[in-house]
Length: 367
Ligand SMILES: *Cc1c(COP(=O)(O)O)cnc(C)c1O
Image 1 (tube, rainbow, N blue to C red):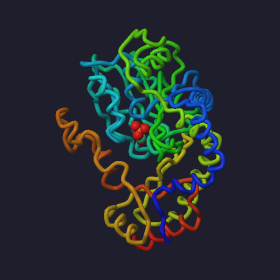
Image 2: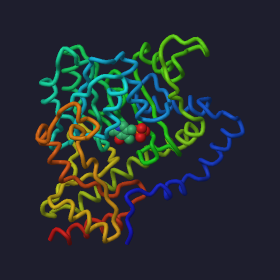
Image 3: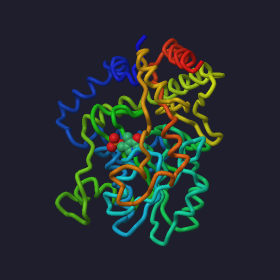
């Protein structure tokens, strides 16, 4: 049996009849950039996430940049960022000329460890970026408390957490501002690049709108520096169609996670992901922990099962950040996780037969 890591074709086949007319309508109306399909998607997506202002942008990375840019971050400022995340989280700070300051993760959730944040705060700290990694919300209450106490901004990177909930509230509206990614492999994926920024703060919202479009609210009247971070019309149309299915797809991911947990039970040295008591996890990734990870990954590959590593190299030891002078040993929880984590295939269309095959293959290898 072959189990791909991701199966975008299966999803496309299931919505082809809905999505093709939506794309054709964009072409017929020549609404290639922004336009009605984008603004309709923005309204629906913001509503789903309980956040007042939402803007479609060109990617999650650009969204990360816009959030800190709109907050006024610049050279000399420090931004607290988990060491355990995709590097695009840190580009938000570096593109503003600010300095990322890394923090270790919690051993159970793999998200930023709020107990380790305060020690990293200096007079230069201007923001904390919480990432809801793998689809599980970070522990936002203690982070919000720290941010309030030190008068710094807390923001969210929701690239992996569409529809995820923290204490019954959706991510994206749990802080000053947030960014989402619609990269094709994300839980809600465009047919190309895409992202969104969201906030409940009208002043930040105004800045988002301007930064996205050359720093102008009114065309050719530029109030501030900006960029071209606009969303394409076709992506807005595709996302609008797909958003209607996202609830069902998310439940299918959760069902698949439950099946994995059931079939992985009792396998020695294999730790399934833990859904924290405050979280509704949306399983963008299903990340287990296992000793002899590399050998298991190779074995699974030989048996036709594709897996991934999210992420093999923590940010503080990436070459790109060598100038920040971190070293191996600075963040032991993240470093240990990087050697033991393994992402199993996860998508809504995965079948129980495939999940059983993956788990049986793991059991056979470990025993
Ligand atoms: C995917 C991802 C991003 C970047 O999103 P793009 O749309 O690919 O630019 C940022 N942060 C995290 C945590 C991600 O997983």
